[in-house]
Length: 146
Image (cartoon, rainbow, N blue to C red; front, side, top):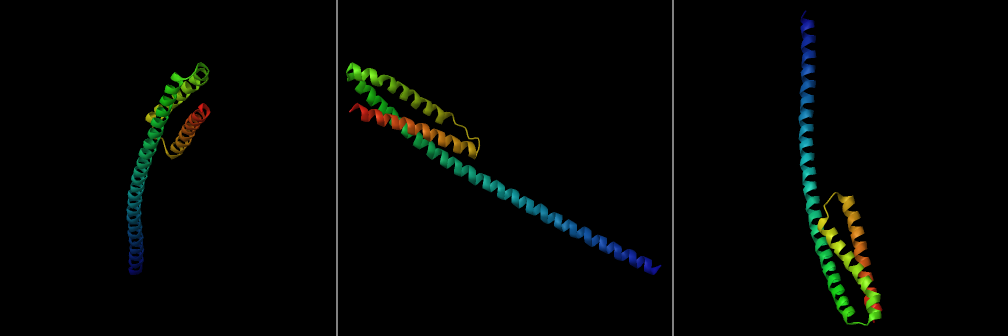
């Protein structure tokens, strides 16, 4: 009978050791998970701050380019008013189209809402392309008028 109690006690000690070991691992896993969540939250905050900084700079640069285009369009309009009929007819339509594109760019930049990094990169590419088209067309107009 003593052997029976001895074996039962040994089995009990082994079971308690296993349970305590599992409990320690579980606590360690919970702690690791908490640390991972905290790190992920910090990474998210850092990424958001970086995006905010990039967005503000992009918006500032875009608004500057739009204002520059508006000024150049206004200059061209003033020159068209004093120009001959042939010159006037030739460029009035082009200036109206450029003015409308510039207004659309202004609207696009003011209405943009962040929807993720991929969409942001796509927006930047498209916006910069459209901005370059307007700028190049304005440069072409100014070079043609001479």
